Image (cartoon, rainbow, N blue to C red; front, side, top):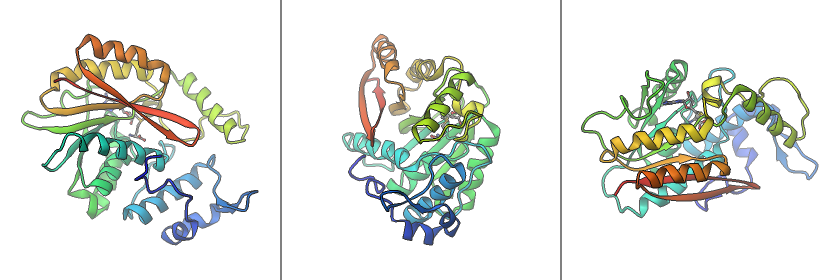
Length: 285
Ligand SMILES: C[S@@+](CC[C@H](N)C(=O)[O-])C[C@H]1O[C@@H](n2cnc3c(N)ncnc32)[C@H](O)[C@@H]1O
């Protein structure tokens, strides 16, 4: 994890339970005598997230609609910290402004960006229910309402179009794209994840997530390719375009698209325990 990530050390469950007493019933001692929760239980992860947000980020009122994507906060914070490093190379003196494409119902990236670095954030999403939930979290927390704006992308075929208005400038864009190419692929991945956590449930998705959150035609590779293609139209309104790439095998296709459009780019590697992930950052000089 990034050295500045507050979650890199073991979790202090005493403080977390104090911040969110609802977490208490999910905490138990594992075989090594360490406090933990069952990460395959969405309710336990939800309560852990509420505790993290209250304890570390002073966000007291956070919730998501039932069955929506419940984000692992430590990993989401890593993307923000590595973005912080990238932006520090740019020596920006103004108030930093960013745009999160696909903010989701959880609005996690704008929340972390605003609370960790005081960046102003715009979050967009095609799904009305997610937009409503994200707006309601922002409005329920006075320390977020002045810094985060949420906009509804009504055109499912567009990414920046209709969202970035004339005269606006964002120092960066970020995105956690819908990863899978189909519902079947999303289900397969969820089952694999459960198996890794030592569970053998064979039913539906257990990690939360609605269709729009988890999959789109062509999966993340096509989504990112579309984003790159559209980004050229906004090259003077966004400093650095970035996106997570969860599947390493998608990188060659993405690099090819970037080279074709003569963008300069870099890949920032992140590792969370055994899991390696990365984001790609590009700009047009
Ligand atoms: C994997 S989820 C990410 C949610 C949240 N940012 C997170 O990291 O937990 C992807 C999100 O992208 C949204 N989405 C899909 N196509 C979009 C588009 N063209 N513009 C904006 N959002 C889009 C989906 O509705 C979904 O909420």
